[in-house]
Length: 117
Image (cartoon, rainbow, N blue to C red; front, side, top):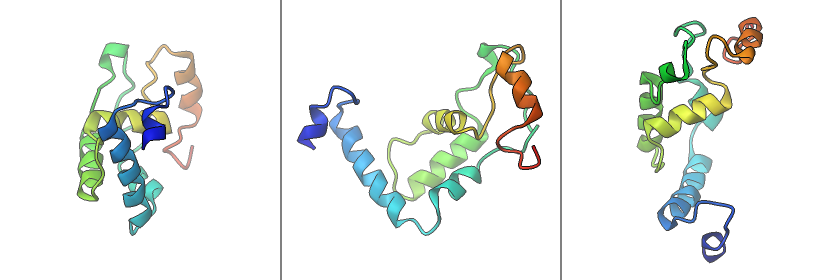
């Protein structure tokens, strides 16, 4: 704990460090793989229109609220709906590239949450 609190490369908040350690323990003790649980909250391909502008990109969705509740039910901490939505974006569970983004054009050909791609 002391080593982590002195590490300038991470957020040095004791409560968050303790939660991270405990969350790891909880994930290891889960009765299902974490990736399967997280992907179960991915919206169906095409379920949501592509955002037109950055202002249209949500901070939370019904899926991220449900994911946060499921993780909290399993004892995880610091996993609110906004954090869960950011995870969904970073891991490719949702594609929030705005309509005129160059990446949006390439993602129209194949999306990570569409196995048929």
